[in-house]
Image 1: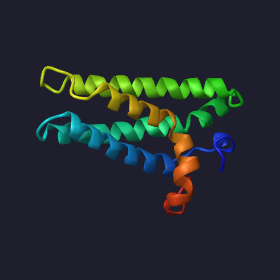
Image 2: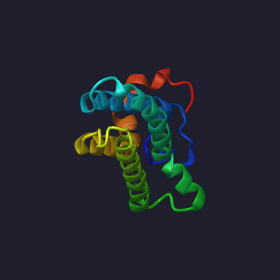
Image 3: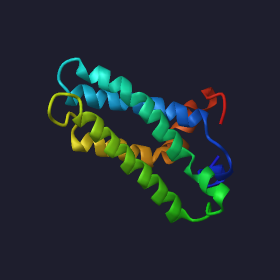
Image 4: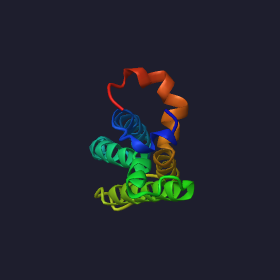
Length: 139
């Protein structure tokens, strides 16, 4: 299943699997950036957000196919970039209202998560599909 061929399919299992992986990456970043055990409470909030953002990013092609603009690579990439930017803003906003008075997560970690969300369909297709794809029950 190439990323271009997946435009007509709703991708559920792989997006949830990659969302969980990105959620754990976010937990690792939070444990490095925020002192004490506060990172765990913040991290438990970040995992569902990663699931949602990854699900949306991996299904942008499907949504664009429904409205008839699936063949435009730049619109597809732009929509994914917008989702990544929204995710970065959400991460920074959640980190800044932790009650500590400052932003708890570094910009580079936020940028890495945003780029991973933008690249999530390609990460799945070219890295993870062959490794764990046969364990995912539905696509």
